[in-house]
Amino acid sequence: MGFERRPGDRRQESEGPKGAVYFTDAFPARVEEVIDRTGTRGEATQIRCKILAGRDQNKILRRNVKGPIRVGDILMLRETEIEARPLNKGRRK
Image (tube, rainbow, N blue to C red):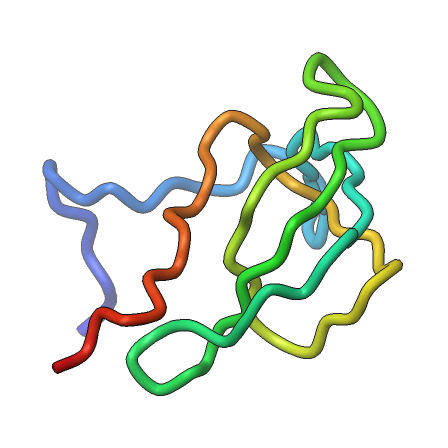
């Protein structure tokens, strides 16, 4: 009763050495301002950050970040084109 591969099975053998780590391109950004908590349970924080390198260098973006964050931290962003929606303060009724 061994494991058999089926024709539609998407799993593949690893081609590189076992345990190899591959990274995607990322761009550093410095946290300029912590705006507020967001998410249904307040699990994310909305921040403004300044891109330090890459095509969008010196651009300031609004992003949602999960986990502990403070002004001056450096984030590594995988993309720098999409910006988070601004928080609406008086939305709840």
